[in-house]
Amino acid sequence: MIGSKILVADDDPAIVYGLELRLRTAGFEPICVCNGLEAIDAACLHRPAAIILDINMPDLDGLSAMKRLQGNPATSQIPVIVFTGSDQERYTALKAGAFGFLHKPYSSASLLAAVSAALVLRPEPVCV
Amino acid sequence: MPITLPFVEHIVHQGRTPLTVITEFTSLLRDDLKDSLSFDQNRLFDVISDRAGDLTYTFNELLDVALIASNSLFVDRSRGRIADILSDTLTAAESRASLANREFAISPWPNTPDVYCDEKLARRSVEYLLRYATTASERRTGVKFAGGFCDHSRRIVLKVTYRGGPLEANALAPLHLQLRSHQRPQEHNSPFKHVALAAAGGLARANLGRVTTSHADGENTLTLTLPAAEPKTVIDAYLDRQAASFEGSQWVALVLVSMDPFEELRPFHALLRYIAGNDDLVLALDADMSLVLVGGERHAGQQFIKKLQIGLNTPHHAEICGMWSLPQQRSEALWQTLDTLSLLDTRAEFAKGKQA
Image (cartoon, rainbow over all chains, first blue to last red; front, side, top):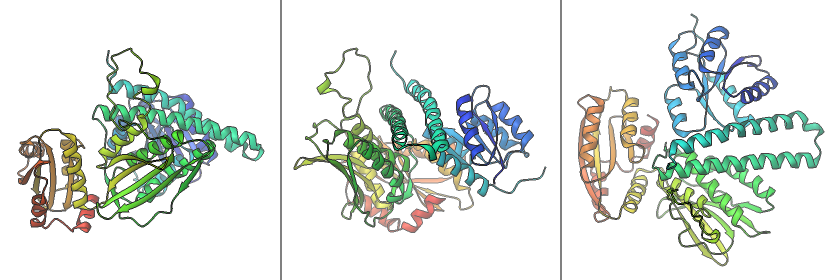
């Protein structure tokens, strides 16, 4: 798990910075982008072990980005953890296939627990 | 322009984002400096975290009150152990009480049956009650929390007790968000003084439970009840809520839906949930059969069946096997019907249905 690439997508640079520091300190290799379109490109390019995706982002929102990732055989098996503050969004995201969710503001323990669970429980990668 | 739910959601989102940054950066700094921090510096970090928690609480409260007032609360009920559900909430309350120089005592948990509720709403209800009690309690006194079970009503009972003067009779009255007047309420008569209680009460209702208050010997007790995860208890709690919701006559129909055993159940349940809008109760008792309790006007049951057939576009068989007018016909007839259908005392099947 240590050294695994984790893709982070959020339009707030300070939140991305915080996540980047926290994940790097924990031994992961964070890859940071600021919208849904960049998240899709980065997922195809880097094949991260997990993705942390904000719901509310410009250009392409998190739920739409997750659906596109699921539709691509190269990225469909990557577990997605969504960032959300709403119970309805959380439910919608989980029904749409999100692995887990994080509430803003999140605690470092819940972040690392969610990422670790995603890495341990994710399905076997598909070779394409 | 009246304040709408999307506006409140927007404000809450805008507030939570900087809070996330404050919380995370504080935590990162603290982790980085942990070996070199003095006692006072640690205390300062505690206070920052605590105040950030206060703001998070305020945003949650604002959103919950708006969701309750607009009847848009999202509910996702399942069965669980109440001690597990509240574990983190009680730990946080303990640390907050310590910072506020209040005692906080938790009575040992007795063994209780599983509860049937939306876990997040249950946690927030208890957090509102504990916050209210901590703020309202007299200095140098504390807050006590106890969990238990009422065997007679089959409800999980959670009690928050603190020393203080008696609450006003309308302390639990629902808040109506009609912000049209510019007139400020008198401080001593502000309807927002008890907003946490109103929010806790609204969330409890959504969870088929209730919040009550009592005062004796200089102590206030805030009581939250939630139904045990047993079909009869959950239906009883649902009927309680329906009967209390309307001044006039309210009809409840019990609809039995026969399922094709080879049908994928998940979309069916999702559709039921969508149609019921999370406000009515959907009980899945068996893989081959669903029992649906539909509340509303006299023809709500028939309307439900029509929507079901249109939505599924398949010849599912559905029939109304009982209709009752509340509260007049709240009688043994309902339980007799359930007995006839052999649907009572099926806890294992109930659990299986929920997992499906």
